[in-house]
Image: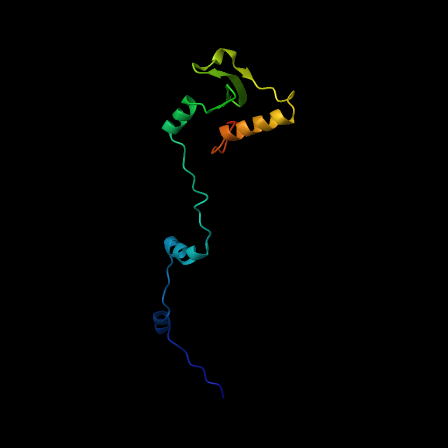
Length: 124
């Protein structure tokens, strides 16, 4: 013979406790399993840093020549004790250079763009 015992409805509801989780509580529970987002945090460029970047140009001086990059183009001009002769500045033509000259230009471009993520300011 099988007997069944029944719990009254009011007593049954008293035994169940309601658990409520907020979004911050759930995040606190799973936070140890989430990857760190330090590498995703980037310092946003400020208005003053953009102004300084537009105002100044990096220049490399080598063998009495000055080299710089402006608007995605690579320029060279004569340099002396009086400064850079901007009137004689020409765009560098790498198509006619030999391997030694290309290695020199490559070194100069690396020094000019050192520490910059977007060296030519062009997304393409």
